[in-house]
Length: 443
Image (tube, rainbow, N blue to C red; front, side, top):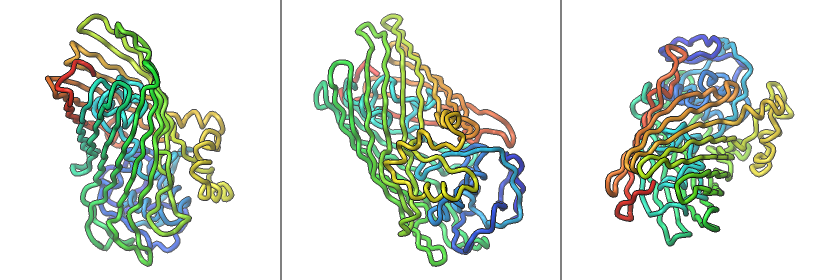
């Protein structure tokens, strides 16, 4: 396998090997690498066009866990023979990023927006505070073939349910399972060690209550498990499944009037929890994607059969910004920072100051049209700064209700071409809903 040369961090065609110059790696025999294009491209999902730089930087930031993570993303024998020219970037990275993938097709069709949209059976994964506003109990199953343009065995699946005790109380439960398909584990020389199927999953249980006719709050607890190596050892290091516990806290305000017109908004703090570790090294734990979400949605009902809504959503990871290159003191502080302090410091720790902090906000715009509460059209746009991941894409979606069943479909429109093609292009999501009330006209 010949290493390729990276120029301005565009995606090289036909990647089969990777080599980077930063500084020689210590104990390279302790690194696990995966010989599979899917793993390298998996990193594109969260850091489009910026991936190699971010992975290299993380190698120097996290002593043990990143031996695993970097190998997981680079997938093939590492050397120090290829130079990479990079633009100034500083992507905020975390472990278990699948927790930030849109978990349902309805929101996926609206630019990954769900904090303040009208309540449904998947509301608990977006804003636990609005679950109690569901009119009826229901179950939703979603399947997403992930990176479909590149691989055929990576997917995200979820099963979500809502049960209403009465008009003011409801519980939510869900399971999310993310499979990275079949992977070949190798050492740094490219010698096959074994085959495995890395996977991650999360289990959520939450309670939501209306405070009055317009306001609701909720809290959810979750367990997260990440098995990236299937127990394959690396030199003297034994890797294990990482696990973490976390909580979501949500608030929802429903200002929609009886005639169907009005404004709704919500706020949610999600994935507030422990760090995650893949070894017994206490200094090698990674942050999970704690996040602040703010959503706004306006709805207008034209008549008894036609209605439309538009929304805006802002999201920011409550995770420390990686320190500036070469700042040893900041690097040590980053590694030792506690989870709780990181939530607060994440609003003012960017090396570039306030202007860089603003770039860490992700923006979603979306709209939804309903005809007779049976057929829906959706569209949206997702934006992320080029310095913080560079994800930018349009989405479209369809919805259909028939009796107790509902079907949602979302599609991420292709963008770019050649080496600049968005690796998320042609992403599909499918959701099937079952209304436990026996059929309803409400969304």
